[in-house]
Every structure is written in structure tokens, then in C-alpha cells.
Length: 328
Image (cartoon, rainbow, N blue to C red; front, side, top):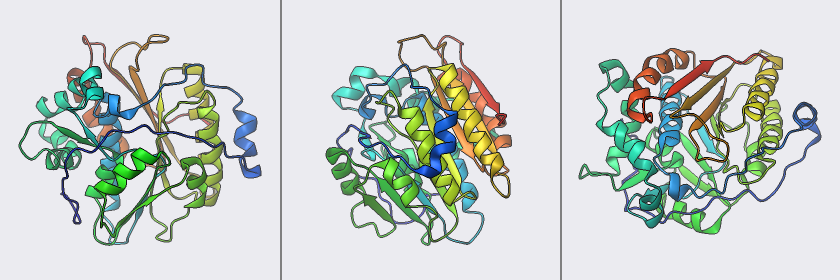
């Protein structure tokens, strides 16, 4: 069900997302000492090429499931999106046509035959995608801030951080006159510790950096460690490209260790979904998510829907997923 006064708008201009500043804080020393690697494969990232791809599908299904869970209690909650992007992406743009990634992502899911149970789990997410494509033909894809905004109730709020001017301008346009959504001109790594805990003391932080810099994994971890120390009871959804097994394993282990050390101890859930074997230097074929303090319902929901996504999203029958509780 769509909440609030969010209305589908015309496809916005696609835009780059940048991360410009490195955040250092003495409270993140634990993470800095534990993680000393640099991601060996920086990504030259423009989301206009990738909007609606398999990684977006997996991430946004999980995002929608978490927000749907938060709706179960009447108390207000806040969603904080640290790297929000342009908000709405034109699937007829030159970038989208050149990559064609959405054709093997959201387009396939829209045509897939899911079981009744899995269809119900995907419905909140797909209802929002359909709302932006009222004629039934895929022309636009809503990014994370619009997925989140579509699921807010009147008492809930969204903070969307975007530093790159063109992307921020597009995001402001698509959320114009929206009293429940605030677009912030701030680097996501600065915003992450600055905006927690929210005054509602309930909610979700989506950490979805572009991974343009070689040290992006370290920056992510340091900022998370600082934010988590300030708000250990919040839900955190962390996206990463699963290209380097060493980097992703160390990230998962250290995030799990930080969660386990909280009082009361938190939980960490790890999801990786691959549409094909990940080749060194090749296009992204594996996406990862770390969910800190996941809803108790989420793991069971993912065990239901993920097997049914392997066929429509996979390439040549090679899709597989990994769902586990990482060891600290």
C-alpha cells in the first residue's frame, strides 16, 4: 500500500553520486584497527546505468520488507538514506539504453510468476514501481528514497542525503512540497553519525555508497562504527558490491562483531545474491547486504522469496544466493 501524498512524476534526469570526504573519529578506532584493506576494484559509478538492475531489485525488496515491518507499530519512525542519488531514473535515457541492466532486473521480475506467498512479499515494492509507470510499460525506476517515501505513513519521516548537485536537484524536484521528506546537502559519511539517533528512536538507516574510492569499504565501516555506537538499537541496511571475497568477509565479520558487542547484543544478517560467477574486472554480478538488527520476520521472508528470484534474475541458470548470520 502506498502511503502519504507521493505522486508519480515524470522520469527525472539521471545523475552521478559522489563521496568526497573521509570521516575520521576516535570512536571508530575499533573498526580502523580491524579493517586495514582497500577495495581492490573501485567502481566507476553512475547509477543511471544501473537503475533497476538485479542489485536494485534485491536491495529494494529488502528495504520494503523492513519498512513494512516498521509499519506494524503505531509509533513514528524515520528512514535515513545516506547516499540517496537522483531519486527517479529514466529507463529511456541514453545511459539506461546503453547498459540495458534494467531489462535483466526489474523488467524480468515484473514478468515473473511467483508463488502467492512470494508475490505478497514483493507487492509493497512492486506497487511503488507500478505507481511510477501507470500505463504498464516500464519507463521510470524509483530509487531508494522514493521506495522509502512510498511506504511512509503520515507520522513517518525521510531524510535523504545527496552531495552531488545535479542528483540533489533532481531529488529535490521529485520530492518537492513534501513535508515528510527532507533532502540534505551533505556528504553521506558526515550525515551518518550526525543524524542518529533520530528523535523518533525508531527507524532505518540505509547506507548505499557508490564505491568509487579504493578505501570505500574502510570509510563505510568507520562511519557505521561511529553511528552504531550512538544508536545501537536502530536498523541498518548496508549495501556493498560482492567483488572481493576478502573485503566483504572482513566487512561482514567486523560489523557482526560490533553488533554482538552492543548492550543488549545486536544481530547481523548477511545476504549475497549472484546472477552469474563474479569475474575479476568484470561487470557486477554479485550484490551484498548486511542488515544489522533485522526484523525477526526478515530471515524467514527472504528464505521464501530468494529461491524464486534465482530463475528470473539469473544468467544462464547460474544464479545463487547466500543467507547467513555472520560470525563475529
